[in-house]
Length: 407
Ligand code: UDP
Image 1: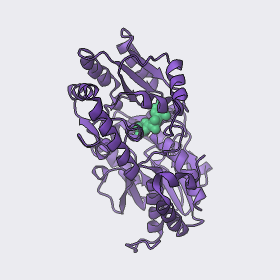
Image 2 (image 1 turned 180 degrees about the horizontal axis):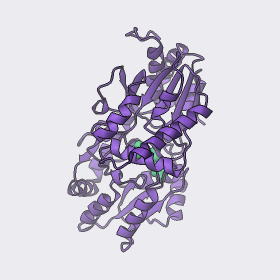
Image 3 (image 1 turned 30 degrees about the horizontal axis):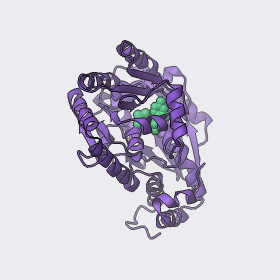
Image 4 (image 1 turned 90 degrees about the horizontal axis):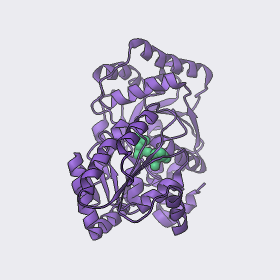
C-alpha cells in the first residue's frame, strides 16, 4: 500500500506538507465511512485507497458496509436507477423493507464517531435510527440526482434533510437542502495497480491471457455491465466505425456485489456481439486491477458512452494513461472532458462513431489530447486533492463559522 511520501514525485512536497498541516487540525478525530460494498464500482475503489492515507495523516478513519441480501440490493438498485431518472417501479412494502434493513443494521452496529459519512442511497436512512448527539452526519452522494423520480425523491428527502451536510460530485447535482452542500470530485490513485506504470511484459501477459492480438486498432470501454453505461450503444458505434476502419472492440467489466442487474446485461451484450470475432466481451473478476490497467494502456481509443454517470472514474483512469477519451456528455464526465482540448464529449451513437473514426485516423491529434488529459487529471483528480478536500471538510464541519482555514 502506498504511503504519503510516495506521492512526492507526482504532486510535489508542498502539496504533501499542506495535507499534513490540514490534517493536524483534525488530528485524532474519529470518522466512519459507510457504503454498501467493498468490492466493485467507483465508491469502493476510492475508499480502498483514501482510508489508509487518512489514517496515516492522523485521522482515525474506519470503513463499514451495510449488509443486505439480494432482496435488499434489488431494491436499492431500483432506488439507484430511479434517482438517476428511471420511473420508480417499487411498491411501498419494498421501501418498507429498505428501511427495515437500515433499522436492523443500526441496532447491531455502533457508529459512534465525530463524523459519519454515508455514501449513496443504500445506507441513507441509517441516520434516522441513531441517537442525535454531537456526531456530524454527512451524506455523500456519488450518483446523478439532477432529475430523480419525484415520488422517490420526496420519500428520500425526509432522510437527506436530517443530515448536517451533503457532498455532491458536480454542481448540477446539488439540491435544495436546508444545510451546506459541498462539491468534492472523486479521484484516482496514480500508485494503485489500476493506474501505476506497467511493464511491456505485464501488458502483453494480459493481452495473451484474453487472446487479444494487437493487429488492429482497439476501441475500449471498461464498465460494470449496466444500462446507464450503454454497452449496446457502444457496439452500434463500433459497427459504424467498422464500415470504414478495420478495428476491434473490447467491452470489459464485471459486476458489483450491490448490483444484481450485471449478469443479465452481460448476457444481452454477449448475445448482441456473438457473430463478430473482433468484439471481445470480457467478464472481469473482482480485483482485476492490472487487467484493467493493461487494457486501458493497450487501447487506441477509449470510449465511455454513458447516458447517466455520477463521475466516471474509468474516464479519469484512461486520461491518466494519456488516452484520448470519448465520453457521453453526462454527469461527471462533463467536468473531465473538454472538446478538442483533452478528449471529446458526445451525445449519440453517430457522434461517438464520428469521434472514434476521427481519432483513429489522426494518431497525432490523439496523442496530443492524451498528453493534455494526463495534465488535467494531475491537476484535478488525483487522490491527494481528494484528501485535501476531505480534510478541509472535517475542519469546516467542526468550525462552521470559519471562512478561511489557516493550516
Ligand atoms: N471497475 C473494476 N472492475 C470492473 C469494472 C469497473 O474494477 O469490472 C472499476 C473501474 O476501473 C473504476 C470503477 O470500478 O475504477 C468504476 O467507477 P466508475 O465511476 O467509472 O463507475 P461506477 O461503477 O462507480 O458507476
